[in-house]
Image 1 (cartoon, rainbow, N blue to C red):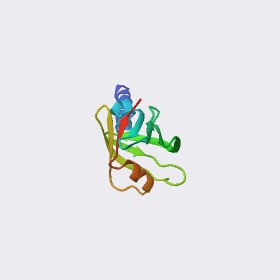
Image 2 (image 1 turned 60 degrees about the horizontal axis):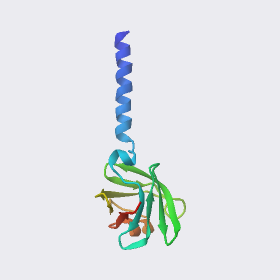
Image 3 (image 1 turned 120 degrees about the horizontal axis):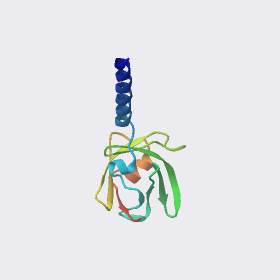
Image 4 (image 1 turned 45 degrees about the vertical axis):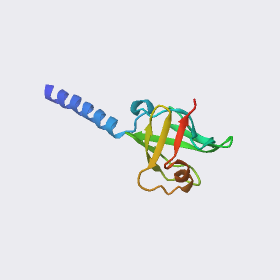
Length: 126
């Protein structure tokens, strides 16, 4: 009986460790910033990153795209959007407390996302 109980407890602990290692983290877990970020070269475009793992891209006063993201270590994984970009894109990110920078990992088939994100610096405003 004790052996069965031990195996059950060990299985539950191991399963929870595996799931937490494989799942995506929340922004605060990995230090990913949330708030409003404007492009360092044009403050009329940028991103809103939310704690609930959603984002919005704004351009000249309107929301151009929105969706969900995942975080794995220093990678921001945009899950894709309906319509123009239904496939994911992965970017390494760095944040120095003010500047959020993105660098493409692999390939991104979404031209608008790649052009507006890869190699860009976004400045935290709120």
